[in-house]
Image (cartoon, rainbow over all chains, first blue to last red; front, side, top):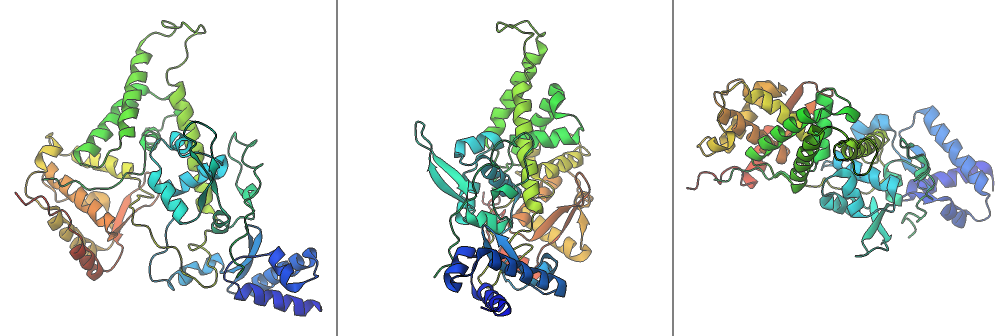
Length: 188
Length: 256
């Protein structure tokens, strides 16, 4: 297929999708197109939008692509929504950071670090699907182990967990964790 | 009789300690344990006298601090069955504070990213709803409490929690605050207490302010760390009155 045509179709896919679209999904739809070519075309789209100062961008999050508004328009876009969108409060962010770096981790281990009960915060994080139970720890009581989700990466605009800044003295851990590869729920 | 504000305190004892350490401009690794213990206990007492829901963790930490303090009074090496020159009794606490601080910084890193539904928006669908919990951000609850302490120092000593029984209603004070904010726009926290004539009035004003935060009627911001605390209306006055009508606030005190 002709390059420009392909780019146009890609643009339509991202525009019409109601969530991030994975490369795999795009290839399923487009058939025999090289990954490299798709990635290159998406990058081209992105730089075209940016140069032209358009009101949207293509971002790569959690191993998928999505159209999003640029940050400088946030103030106006926000006014579209009636209710105030949920904030990321400090306790929420701290708990999330602990889980992101130390996953898989139990609630007791999180509480040992924060020095405070995290029941409520953990429930909120799960409700917002930023965190999920990934397993049970093989110790007495078999407590749940928590980890971050693809939504976490999407929310914080990360391709994968390796984009977490290195924590002081923690270089050797966490960063080696594979990204959460669960594909975003957009196929339907 | 119970005028307590049921604010869940999400911040823990470690937050309070870091707050005190920062305020005193001291190093985590060399904490003057007597001073910090004293200030910690004072903050705790104030929180309790305000009837804030103080979690058990705060009391555990208080016990830990007192224990460490008592051990530092012993000369080093006196109880060193384990050999060596006896470890610093503060060591475990310092380790915990440093580790916690690391994750606080990591949380700040996360907050600086482009966050979905705050900075950048995807197509379609609605953003997640605001959860109903109350959390203090830039000025932490501890910033507010230490500011309150300073104001209370202007008034002669009397126990704050004994006088809460009197009949100045939190509800009334809420309305006064709202009118004031409506008229003046942004207001410095300290100036809310300019006209106060007693500790009681200061405390009631503070509780009224917390109630207004709870129903999201006002916004509290701090220009910079340890800077001036500024308060303003978060929504139009009419909407605040609507919310207040729905909530049974501060009225349970007058029943007897």
